[in-house]
Image (cartoon, rainbow, N blue to C red):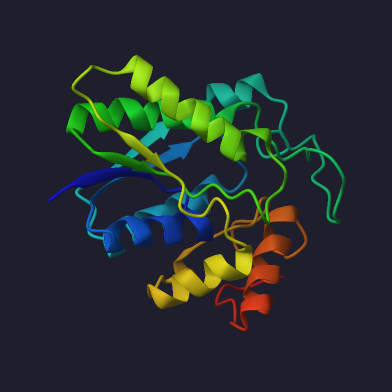
Length: 219
C-alpha cells in the first residue's frame, strides 16, 4: 500500500487530516513535534492515542526545544500573554516560521521511508492568521520539496483542510468517525480547555455551527 507522513499535533484539524489520509488509502507514518509549547503533555497524549487509533506504521516524536529558546511566541513563552478575545493582525500565539521547520522534518522522513505524500492539517479560512498557513506558503514549499529531494523522489504535499471552514472540518470528522474526544486545541491548559484562547474559540465555533457537541471538557 502507499504511505504518507502525517504531521499530527493532537489537535482536531490534524486528527481530521489523518482520517482523510487513511480514508484515501494511505498507511500512516505519524510525526509529532514537541517544541516546548505550554500544552505539550496533553498534545503528546492525544497524538499518541490517535496514532494507535489509525494503526500508524510508526509514531515518531521529535523535540525542537530550540524554538522555545528562540522565543517570540506566547505558545512557548509564559511571559507573553495570549489574548482571551479576538484581536486584529497576527496573534502572539504565532511561532515564527514554525511550519517550514515541521515540513522540512516531514519531508526528510518521507524521503527515508519512501512515502508518497505529506499530510498537514493547515487551514486558511477559520484560522488565526498565521502567515505560514496561507496557500501561497504551501505552494512554495511544494516547489522546495521538488527542488531539494532526490530526482526519483516524488512527494506530494497535501493540505486537504486548507479551504474548509471549522464547521466543515467538524462535519468531515464526524463523517470519518474521528474520535474528537482524543483531540486537544487549547493553547494554555493541559486538563480542562480554557474555552477563551484563539484556538478554543475557533474550535467551539466549529462545533456549534456544525450542530455537534464538543466532547472535551472546558473550564
